[in-house]
Length: 167
Length: 125
Length: 92
Image 1: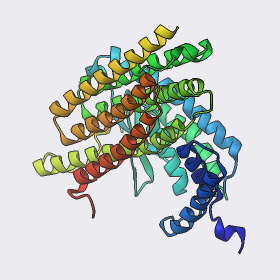
Image 2: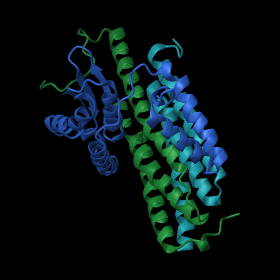
Image 3: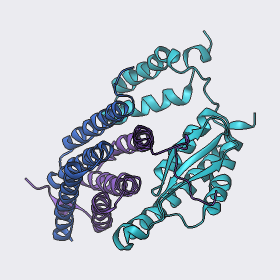
Image 4: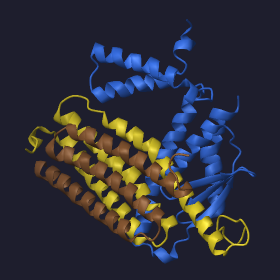
């Protein structure tokens, strides 16, 4: 009857409870009870679907800094892409696939990295080449491939390695 | 039919107006990009701004508007925001991989490629 | 200010409808199948935003549920279509 047995992933349970309360737009005791039931039952029933052990939530400061920087980057590149769509000649665009060598190994870290890169307009993640562990990206308007490699490695990958990889 | 806009204070209606105009312009620019750009790999970047900045601005505007209109905290638009943040990258990646593999299969069928090189990398690599 | 706000909401509706029209153009033109799927996905997204904007226009929270459902079904249908394009079948 340990706490861990009934709440295998507390963050997921908290998120489910918050989702239920938001969906019903109330904090009445009955809704909190129903939401708590959902928050306990759903992670237990879907446990076999999540084979990887849940990651302990470490280094919230590094995570918050990473997310803030990515949000600024997303808004900045939104305006860049809008400018290019409206004013640039489409034939003059240099859209290219580039390769970025990755050191990050943890699957959750890679999933978060792909979310951040795909959310940024102007870059789309294609795949990780299985033999060399290189990430293939498609860049909307490429000026300097080395700049992209450096940016992704320092701004995104280093905090993710700090959060997920060094155990 | 139309709601009672007169109760809204200025500090709500001004940001809501600005966010709505910005968001709708971004949505329109994304769709223009979808039509105007010449190649699929460029067109996939057009809707990305619709999904991030356009949807974000309109969702924030909706939250502000209803919070002021109903004089209580209305934040359930955060659910849609979280859902879009989780799913839009997945959709973009799936579409990109589909396009890459279909291109590869088409080139192999036509016998135009000798190697198994999937991506047209720049020649200086 | 009130007039400006309702003008902005109407402007939003017009912009989103124009964007949907452009998506339909790409859906009908789109040389390859993946172009059409991309256009359809953008159309879903615009429909969701249209539901939200209609909610603002009528000051009614019920449109939120519509937007939520459109977002959910749009994601599932796009994923199914891309799976179909990649492998030729949806469920392997």
